[in-house]
Length: 84
Image (cartoon, rainbow, N blue to C red; front, side):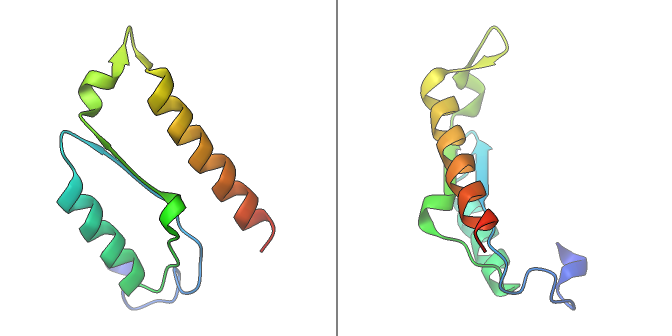
């Protein structure tokens, strides 16, 4: 993202943010702040913080609840950006 600072590549663009980490709260907040500083538009419903990601997999598959949350975010985001 560093190279984007002197451009308008994110200006006025809808962005979805998914952070998956052990905790990730601070990193997620900072990523959202940086993207907004670059001019991105990030709606609350297009942000997802998945804490404890390592424990959310079983046999290599993402647990149903987490998969559903990611799927819902992506479906809604896709709908929003396709209508703009």
